[in-house]
Figure: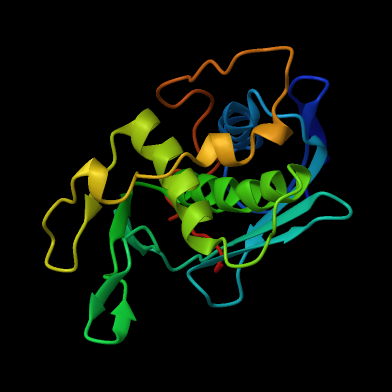
Length: 208
């Protein structure tokens, strides 16, 4: 377990505990970008390898803790299945196509899961009902990664999905009550920070 490290503005702060081979500095930099503009207090982020699942994440509201698990076995690019699609109806039955997001490395997997769990926390902080928000959380995370890294969202047959097919909600407006009122959001594009501690080892994530 690495020593805890802290980053961020006074109203958005991370204490990182990382037991994977991913760089602490790079993880902190990426997750800090996701916190920009939000007043969430101090988040304790624990990143570790999973016991078998591709990836997973958990948000503990009371203590503002986020746990992310990353699978060691993942091969990149990794097609992460998401809940981004609109619900569609056939007769009386409703379903959602499975859209995938092409993730290039373990950092992007961890970042997606972190942003997904962060939105759960923002919903709670904004005083909204926290039930049935998985699709919104996925869209919030996907929007962040697509904007910064130009990632592709794909249909089951591999075709790219148009942005308007999955990014159609006012996600930030829904959680406006959790904003940091002192500063405007300034998106940062591209990776910043160091490289993996072991460039020869594949990087893996946890299940949601």
